[in-house]
Image 1 (cartoon, rainbow, N blue to C red):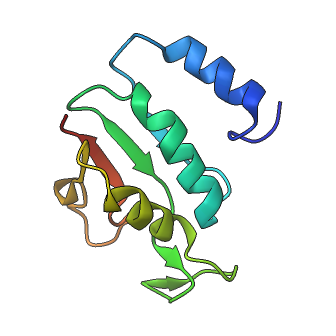
Image 2 (image 1 turned 45 degrees about the horizontal axis):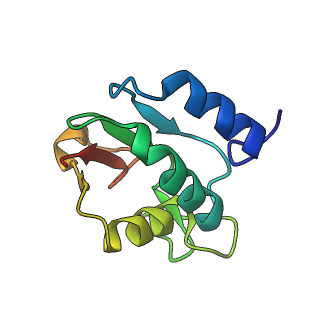
Length: 113
């Protein structure tokens, strides 16, 4: 089928989860900003209140925070930042980052509304 942003894949995933209200969405695809932002915008409505979208590999970004990203964009961290700018339905849940290091800093997004 291909990429998670491919319409066939998205429709199939949405069809499996639609109406359940209890989905955990785990994004671990191409870690460039635009595809991750597209995934966040499409898949986040599947997540019920109190549940999570987990964005993998937010540790890598073009500005090297905290790891230099191989591509010249803001990576998954940039997508999270953009997604959260005008979003009051999710919070970044830092309580899930209780280990010394995480590949997902600011990547645990909990739905609150």
